[in-house]
Image (cartoon, rainbow, N blue to C red; front, side, top):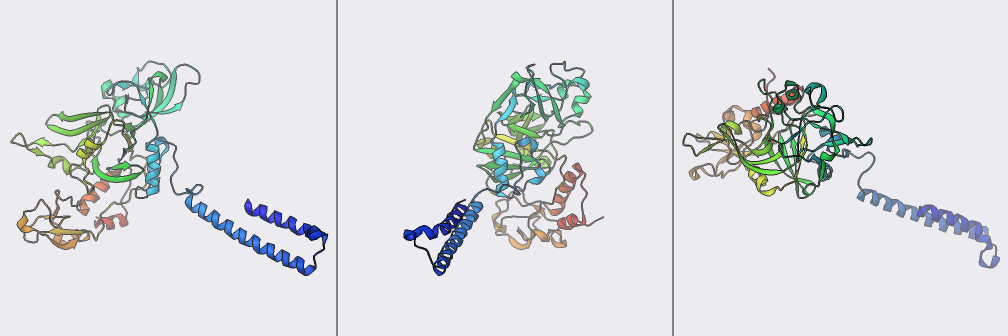
Length: 434
């Protein structure tokens, strides 16, 4: 706009030149010199304006044509569009996490059954009831306000297992996105805690820790796995908040420490253990071998081993607070699932004199000092060779799983979305196409 005003002023000045300087008329030569001066000044101004505009564009956030996915809330996010390694994408997710959450104002483990029409009875379940939701911590998305004044609103959320109804239909819609009517008086808005937030991706079986717009750590998890006897074990997707610190839960001989409730009976907790024969030793091996793929009864099992940032389930227990926002991305409907492998050049270590493990640390604390430092004569990419094919990862120093183990996990999760391995994917894992 400044450039346009300058050019217009210059044009007016040229037209008025004959009347200047005491009404003396300028010669053609003098007129040409004046035009040249004004043209040079206009060009300089245009160049300065263009530079300023370019600088402003560089500083301003991208708008039209930006690669940052657009979503107004959790409920219209497309997980396939997000690159969790991109800081701009992390910031976009964080901004959605910090939005208020709408929950149902009933007990933490109390059930609410949205109906297919306002105010009707819940039964028969299949005809009248849309699904089963929990109070205080499970987020719901309001689709239609109470415009007609009948006291009911239309909401959507992911249904829970339905086992309290003892109805096969209600069990069958576990983790399905449902829509139904609830009393408007049940709705309550909660502002999430602003320090941390969590994202659980069921496709990748990862939990990502967010702080102030950035991912500060990731942990392996196991979410719910359906089976023929229990088709309702799936972990419901959706948005949630942490609501209570339950502590240790016991299911038969299986015990789960550091349980934090996020959805009725669904908690985030440490990978389970059983007591050993001595009655005191915690034996985790049975369940730790399943971490990184679906295995639970709906809860979110989190790794016990600390990551590079010193984070694990115990860290979450100690550092999170009530009303921490939790996003759970579903795996259904996903189309993009590339392999997630350690770099082939990652340096690994071993004891060449009979050691059975490979290590991430040359001075691993799980190895007797007389064998230290360990020998670093191979990399992660060498694990598929004959020399190293029998080595197993050390849990103490957090050595990454073998490529074939990661392939089994990838194939298991890929099957959930109907994805078949390509030749490129098989080659990435070092797996032969049989």
